[in-house]
Length: 258
Image (cartoon, rainbow, N blue to C red):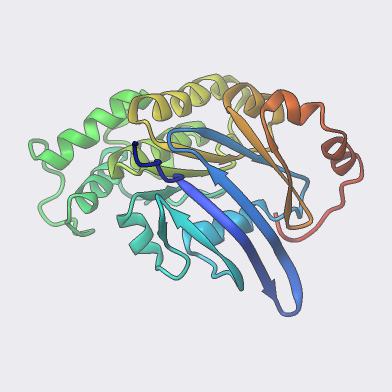
């Protein structure tokens, strides 16, 4: 009998309270390896907070997080990164004064056991640079190699963030509103980049996105958050037909936890 493959990411009874306020409550989520999952919900539902807890930016007050069967609930952000967890943020986390190539090369360098040293940089012939160039080819940014990351368009910044994740060889990727601020003409290309990221690497992708129509065409399953809890987890078709989900959106309220 074959050994069951553990979930890529399993969240059990996750909770977060801050100053007496409940931000997350009894969150359960079981994500299969290699899947592409969307997370939606009205403003204040707790989507970004959930990503903060998964990535280690915030510590939960209840429950646990398992990554490939290992408990990472109390591990640090760097430890999770080394274990194969990568993340983008709503606002860019790139080094704006470094070139496009330098940003990706640094990620490749660190993933190979190096550090964030810029000494003797850039070097066009070493393994980290070659790996970085391969990722930039995939996202279509080779024409911007020497351009400062802070000077490229918002859509290209999002593509660059994906190239950085590819360079780290992350096995679980959290994308926090990758389409935010992206021009409508760049959305299709970015969607294709995300699809290729998942297909080519076999990584597991968990994605928060407000562009519902874009997300529904991209993901395999959708988790719906409302008031700090997940109220539904199903295929896009079943989610769109779910009366509870429809009620949550029609009665949505604004809040501070996005």
